[in-house]
Image 1 (cartoon, one colour):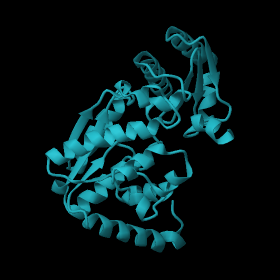
Image 2 (cartoon, one colour):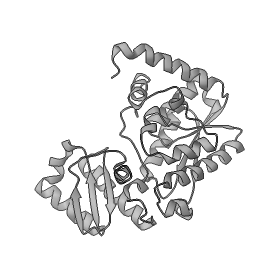
Image 3 (cartoon, one colour):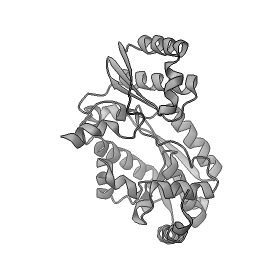
Image 4 (cartoon, one colour):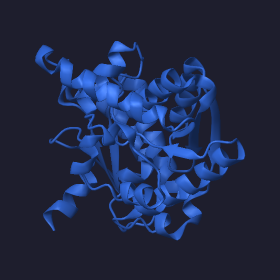
Length: 279
């Protein structure tokens, strides 16, 4: 929740956002289905009219299938035109090699594809859902967006993640409290080449935890043959209960993991960036 004394500042940012969007006329939104891009699609549809908003979701080896389905459902609820763009991310050397600037190469590939889809449908302004907090993390994808002239309206008006969640809650968006999402490549140490087998292994492991422990917020970091599980501390007891732990180990061993570790630091976004901060 936003404190009452901050409401005026938040309303001022919202007014700035509406003015900014109104200058664009028609926009295509790089739409993941997460909190930020869902709010951006929603406010753009209200400001410009739903017919003037195109949501484009990218499907690739790096994106869990359930996220695509959620994005499709939400775009339908918001009443905007929705396109799913399929790309073969592992065919791009700068992505497959998984260097520290992988997100730069991925974002350029994705935004190039979105630009082509958007232009074919008469949308010539592209926006994405980066917020002001994203400036404080390792985000090479932001540089790609800037180079390509793709704007980040939420960041431009200074909206933080907490503020976007609050505005989303006020609008009744079901995604307002959804945990942060990230592509499957974010589970792999930098400079470890990505493979389709690896990414499928990670997705299957996370699907198991999501289904059997009713978790929404989780990560399986792949240090093959080690799996490092990140979940909120409140979920540790359920994972460590004897029967559950035995079943979990059996499933992860079936996937090929030899060692299965529970990260005592808990769930945190971007933990693979820790090695970059310490170097």
